[in-house]
Length: 94
Figure 1: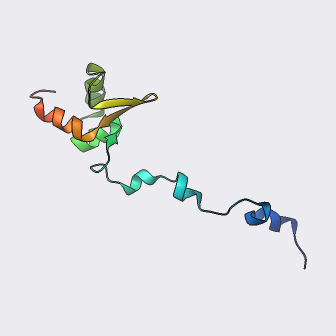
Figure 2: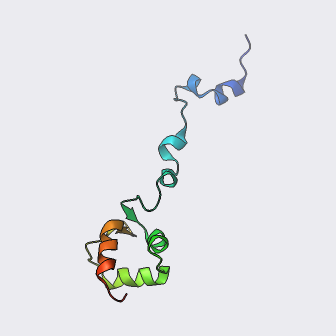
Figure 3: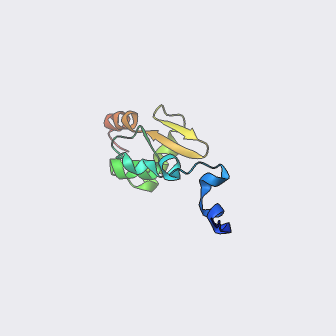
C-alpha cells in the first residue's frame, strides 16, 4: 500500500484535525434571518427597513447618542429594531 505525501495533506483526519464544514459555524448566518426578524440592525440595515436614508440615520443616531433604542458593539452602532420603530411612531418630524 503506497501512501503519497499529498494524501496526508488532503486527509485531515490523519492529522488529528476534525473534518467539518466551517461555514456552519463561521458562515454568514445573518442571511438566514430576514431584517424584519432581527433583534438589532446596523445603520445600513435600519435605513433599508425603515425607509430612511443612511445619512439621516447617522444624523438621528448622533443626535440621540444615549437613546434607549441603540447600543454600541465596539465601534458599530446597533439599533434595536422594535424599540426604534416605537420611537419613530412617536415622532412627528425626523
